Image (cartoon, rainbow, N blue to C red; front, side, top):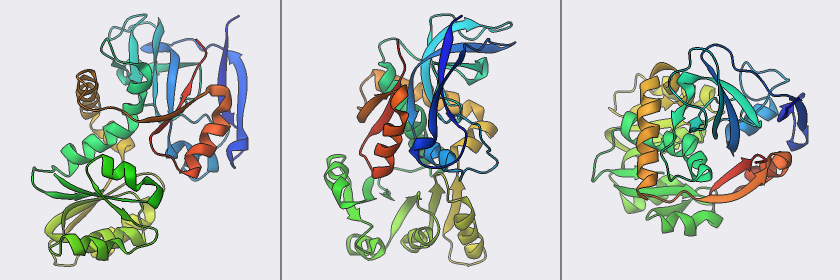
Length: 307
């Protein structure tokens, strides 16, 4: 009998709780597709899930937000993909596994000529960035964006990388980024993307121009950021604050997920950008991958499966 290897979290905690188990390969049900996973991304959401900080989740569970793999078997009624086809998916949970069954609606075909590792680098991070810019902030040419003149808050060790992307780096750990932004643009920013939440979100709000917008995003900051937005709701200053969560966007606007990921894959195939991959680990070294991400890295960390 063919076996499947999968990472399981039986108790919340540090990277040491990531356990590798063996089990039978799952069988696809009606409208499901069995995917032989090739690459899965390691995301901060996976760490939050492992620590027990994700709402409504209880062990045992398997992390893994995004996957890229090959269709191995199609269940009854599957018409959208074919056996042998390279596809991507964003299940949010369960990706740390050699095989996974997903509904056919979850799968996005990947064009020929794209490396699976590069494709996996896009599914979460690039999709989120694309939707923040184009679906929510509606950024226009000439506007100033904090995170087009672009600024990026980052720790000192990442400043060279931020500069290489054409942005002005600001050390958010050792300087007051509100004061630093005001040095460059006393009139404020057109758009701010804030992934920190809480007190940081208030600072992001302060550097906006009148009638412009700050968007909070990312995992783990829903409650404090929402409270900040509510406290500003009735202030007649014309500035706007909102929250963006990819998991909700995908559920309420699934056509955006498909359209935007297809657009990103075409951009990648045309080499409009180059994904930055920091390091790749085998599935069995998921602990090391989590340790690396928690220590802070530039670029994507990936897990690969045995061929």
